[in-house]
Each structure stands twice: as structure tokens, then as C-alpha cells.
Length: 113
Length: 111
Image: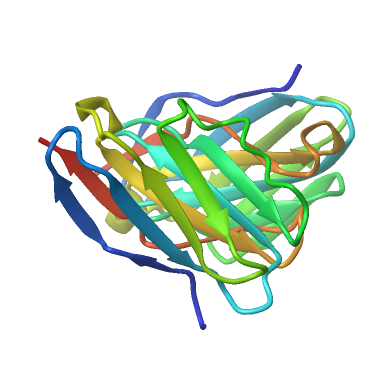
């Protein structure tokens, strides 16, 4: 697509429920990144996919968080048993290759109540 | 280790000039990026520097000194719409070429 597409744009969920966030990167972009941004804070790296290489999961805050990407297409970020501390904007970005500038999606605003 | 520092917040007057500094420590430097992020929106690309010197793009310019681990973003003829956070990000071999992000500088423009 023309840009990075994320869905849903907003998600309100009850504490303890699982949520799935979707990211559709720019066509042809081999690198895909997930970040978390709490209100008024900087970008917190979560996970990085590069082509068919093993993902860099070093930023995932707990085992409740997982992500998948099929080839060089759509990625899903899953948060199990959500907690109120998970409330944040989850941003996805893609780049043509590692080391090039990122294009961000509009993000998913997650609110856990 | 890797580290990026930028001021937390700055205030400037409409029509004036402001310089936002960014200092970094990394090995295997592979370029520095500046992004703009308006409140509630995603970051958008502003500039990229990989060689020393000044890159000018309209009202915005970005400068890099690799020997000093230093960059600045210069905004001229400030407009109210320039109120945003400005993020400095560095790519390096040490981070497997992923961008390492500064915490951002919140720029407040006053009339």
C-alpha cells in the first residue's frame, strides 16, 4: 500500500482480555518494527522483523507480548491477559531495508479498563 | 553503550529561530534522523544526515558533526504549527542498523 496501515485505530478492552493489533507495511519494505509510546513519553522498542530472519524480540516487556509476521507482509502484535499498564499507543513502522528511514503507521491507541 | 540525549522541552516565539540539539554515543555510526511528531499523531520524517555538514530543506536545516557525536535541527521563521515533539534517532552497526531513538524534545511556540 501507499503507507503503513494499522488497525484498529482505537481499542478499549477489559483487564485480562487478549488483544490483537495489526500492521500492514508498505509493499516491498523488508523491515518492520513495533513500538509502544505511553502518553508524553518517547518510543519504546518492542520487536523488529527483517525479511525471513529470526525477529529481534529483545524489547518485548513480558511473555504476555508476542508478534508474528508472515514473510514481508502483515504483522500482528498480540497482548495476552491485558493489564492497565499496557495502555499506550502502539506504533508500527516499516523501512525498505535496515538502516533506512522509517515510515510510521498512525498507531493503535489501546486503553485497558 | 549507546545513548542519545536531547533537551526535554524548549519554548520559542512565533517568527523566531530555534535550535534543537542532539548528542549521541554509539559505535559504527550509520546516519542520524530527525522526525517530527505532533501530539496524538505518528512521527514523520524530517531529515537525514550521514556526512558532516548542514542539510537545508526549506525552513528546516539539520547539522551533523560525527567527530563530536552532535547534531542539531534548526527551525527558522517559526509557525504555530511547528509546535510538536522532535525526535533524534541514530542508526549504527552496534544496533544491527536499527534506529535508536532519543526521548524527544517538546517544542512550544508562543505567539
